[in-house]
Each structure stands twice: as structure tokens, then as C-alpha cells.
Image (cartoon, rainbow, N blue to C red; front, side):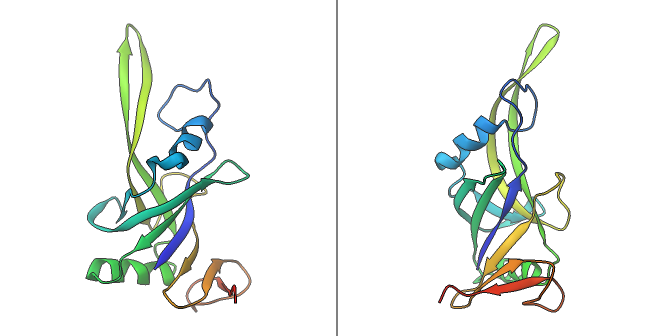
Length: 159
């Protein structure tokens, strides 16, 4: 199954010194650093799949496309949780090197460790926007129709 969604809100200004990503750092991530990062559930357990693509949208939010391997029990369960609207949000797991310089802290290199499918993420506006099962049409998140009875999905067929 392919899953797409927003995994980080718009970045902070370039002069920001903190734990969140700046806009420039997000744009650097999509140049290849996010590709092949593991996908997990709730930031723990076995790897469910990998990030296959990423982009920064017109609102400055970091989006990614993940391939979930449904040939494992964990992957099949996670795919079902996405379809049923239970794992409806995304969360980016990353580390930040922090330097102590006198009385001041300086945020250094940030390294993405994984992207997690979660019930409720730590950051606002990080959510699954679409999924596609092999051989089937893409289901997009919407508020007015359903691909699945328990969540609001709409069918989008490119054919």
C-alpha cells in the first residue's frame, strides 16, 4: 500500500534557532535525505515500510509518500488502521544536535530517523491525505464522501 501525507508543518524562518525544522531545512530534506527512511507505527516496533518520495507543497509543508509492506503482519495491520481512519496522522521522528556555547544553546544538525503512522501526532496539520492499495484506485481524504464507512475518503481514479 502507498500512503501519502503531511509529515511536518511549514518550516520556521531562516533565523530560527530551535528544535523545529526551518523552511530551508525542509527543502534540503526533499533533495534525498528523506528517501528510504523507515516507516513505523507510533514511533516504535518493527519497520512497516519506507519513504519512497517527498516534496514541499505550496504551503511550505513537508509531504511524503510511503510504501507500507503488507506481507508482514505488522504492515498489514498498519494498512488496515490507515484505511479505517484510526492511524490518520503522521509524525516525524528526528534527532537534533544541540551545542552549548556559554549561556546559549545552538540547534545544530537535524537528522530524520523515521516517519510514523500515529493516532494523534505531536504537531498540528500532519495527517494522511491519501492511500492506494495495489491494483486499486487512490482514496483521498475528504469530508463529503467515503471509500470506507468508518472514515471520510473519496475515490480518485486516474483511468
